[in-house]
Amino acid sequence: MSYVPASNRFKKKRMSEINVVPYIDVMLVLLVIFMVTAPLLAEGVKVDLPETTSKPLDKVDQEPVIVSIDARGLLYLNVGDKPEVAIDNNTLVARVAAVLQHRKGADVLVRGDQNVEYGKVITAMALLQQAGVNNIGLVTEPPKKKRRTRK
Image (cartoon, rainbow, N blue to C red):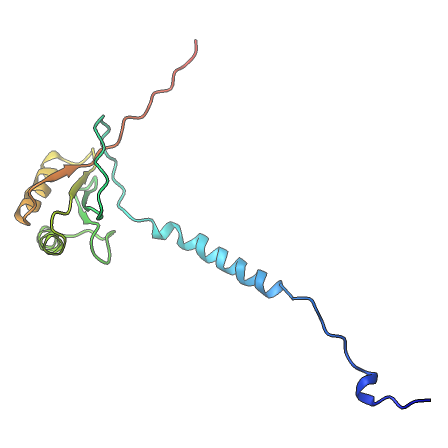
């Protein structure tokens, strides 16, 4: 009888499978995190835009500066670290003037809620003029198509 070393007698077989359970757990946690944070990342302010037929703007290279006016008459600017926070008139003028210094010829658009007083939109446009804006565009929604009903 031949001698077999003790180390070879109880040698374990190598495992050739990958345990994927921890990876599945991590993926589920990431999925939950993204599902919770995705609605919070939606940019913009709730503005009920008026509907009208108009020609869409041509594509531009840089993002336009957008001033939003909600139904309560509060002003918002899409430039800065917190675009969802309302700003006052002086801040609007200062920020828009600073943006126009860095981005010459940037488009400036006003998104006014259809339920806001007309004077609030005009005031915002006058503030933009003070900031050095020469051309201001108004943002609207295309009309919703009416559904035909059968008789």
